[in-house]
Image (cartoon, rainbow, N blue to C red; front, side, top):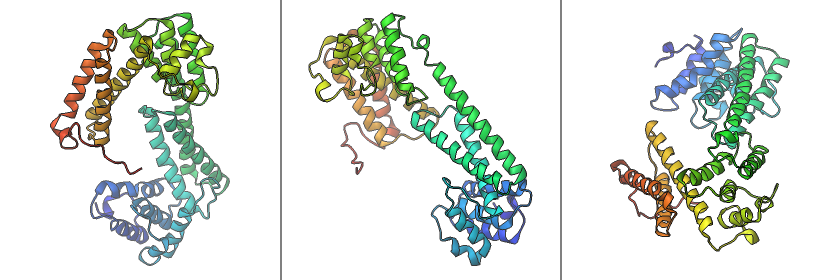
Length: 378
């Protein structure tokens, strides 16, 4: 891809910046095209596209490692180097634009970034509270920068486009949260409509939603209880309620035992979140039903995730294979320990599926079952 193949402003300074950017890597047309996006947007939408601003955008977005801004003063232009340094120093928490040129670059980046956020929200790729908080922080940073830009020297169409993208992204995020929370209704849980089960579910859900707008561990807890119920391992309301507290700590709210002493005892026995004096080491038959149901759910969830990897043509890695072998070992041990017969068929199916994945030719090239663990260096 030559400079003439781009939609960048035809100007000697911009062309020199493009030539410098192409020196950052030996090949990779996709990298080069991505490096030009902000500059092309400025070219197309700015009222008066600034050649030095476009040059600075191309340089900054094309860097794999950050170069000294001053190194481009001679090869591109002194002003492009100055703008680049100002972009390096830009503080998103206290946004101030040194010139209209920096404003053009930041608005272009804002538009591109907000389009990416909208795509993430639309595709449903917010899998956790961490993902949600990350998107929320980006939206807040964009809003702060856009307000500063509008108060300063508004860049007309670019500013309007950025503000519109921000409003759409914020609305999309709110809609996504509402839709996600609607799916957490008890009626969607697949659990029996027993008064105690409903009460514990609603409490557990509300406790999670306080800090996790996407539901936190609500889905996980419900899925463990549902695994127990739908397999026929148990329909005992207190067993299901204890499973609903599998991923729950009592530091900020009711203790599981507040709902019934037996629920509290089963939580102490089966939840990894019960520790210290709360932890109960002796195992009971009902505790094993919860424990083994959780093992089965987590392994089936893991297998489902790996199947999605395959559909997306993502490569297997050594850590995924290690984790899968650990899950298989837990299920194998559960069967050896006399897991409830209601689990047998699904456990055997999960083990067989794990074996197929671990022994597939492409997996064996990465890691053979039984190999020593890789030291992560932590």
